[in-house]
Amino acid sequence: MDRAELTTEQVLKRDIPWEHYMSTKLISGTCLQLLRRYDHKPESQRAPLLEEDGPAYIRVFLNILRSISKEETVEYVLALIDEMLATNPKRAALFYDQSLSGEDIYEPFLRLLWKGNWFVQEKSCKILTVIISARPKLQNGTLPNGDASNSKSKLTSTHDVLRGLVDWLCSQLRNPTHPSCSIPTSIHCLSTLLREPYVRTLFVQADGIKLLIPLISPASTQQSIQLLYETCLCIWLLSFYDAAVDYLSTTRVMPRLVEVVKGSTKEKVVRVVVLSFRNLLAKGAFAAQMIDLGLPQMVQNLKAQAWTDEDLLDALNQLEVGLKENLKKLSSFDKYKQQVLLGHLDWSPMHKDPSFWRENINNFEENDFQILRVLMTIIDTSSDTTALAVACYDLSQFLQYHPSGRIVVADLKAKDRVMKLMNHENTEVRKNALICVQRLFLGAKYASFLQA
Image (cartoon, rainbow, N blue to C red; front, side):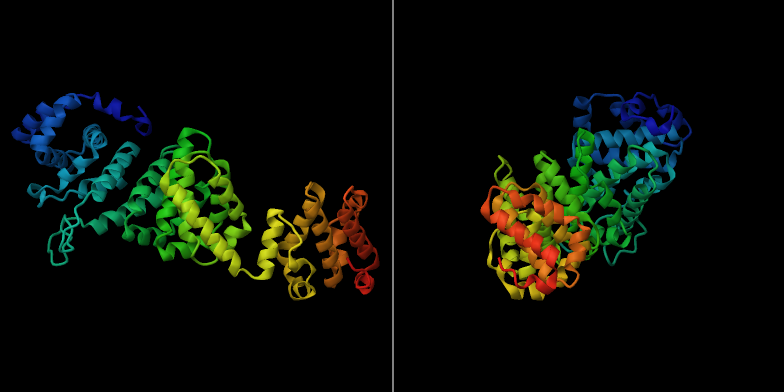
């Protein structure tokens, strides 16, 4: 059988020759007794055994992984440990029992992470993630498994484990060993490990953030929704770390997160993205980017939906307040740009303020005259008469104040598109469409004689 396609259920059906291992002195008689009581027994019988002798079973499993290299046996023991922890994650505390203080509880899994087949690698990664995350934080600041600063122990330190895990996870995201499982497994483990500040540091240093961004896109299947949720959870955890935030500001994470919120009805996905927005709002240029992407209106739409999660509702309220405060701080052109990009044009004072046009006319050249192209889209598609009249007026103002206004607007094929509005039923729309067309024909030299 292809080792990449093995399942835990298939592996646990095997009969392992424990008696043979005892006769060859690879395991002790005590180990054999413990295994006979545990192996192929239902959870109802295993649970009391682990309650009574849990640390002893952990020692048996670790000894087998150290002393026996046969692939089928290694896979079997890893499957036993994985099943034990999946049934009750609190059992990870068994690894830290005082009776195991001299055991190197991490080394077997860390070694197998790089040397085994996919089944072995995946189980080792999941087990390590669970047990390292469950380690007790001692009051004096020392950690188990030889991590005390004054320790001369050669046991594998938690820092060694976390470094090894981050290296392996990033390598899987870059070059997946398994075509369909590597990435979901890696993201699942990262969404747990990134709760630790040290892991965030390691992940940024390993250039891991850029590996997450392509995974942030709207999802439809249950499997892809879970992957999307855990990827966004990673982004939220990274948003608490300034170096990660600095890196995120150089990526397309914000537009991608916005698309996810637009396309998602899954509350847990929306929740973790909104929490990320809330964290990023006060950092760098994210606020202006959120406003450019229409987040104020999106927050209003989200608030109108029937969410049940209190954290999500609180975060939406905080995001709404924060965005409003940032809107107040924006320059007049930022506010204007926000109006245009949202298609919410009205006769606010800046439209008819000559100083606004004189001071900001060069800003219209940003992103290949993006604002003008959006104005043309409004002229083509809007049914709002105020928006149509303002869009025509603003286009005429651009023609008046920009030295190459006629050439730029002509390239947009604006003349015919605006002329259609000269027959509009609304007087205000007709008047401003006429002025715009006249300025197109007359040019800037004579445009100042035409007043709206």
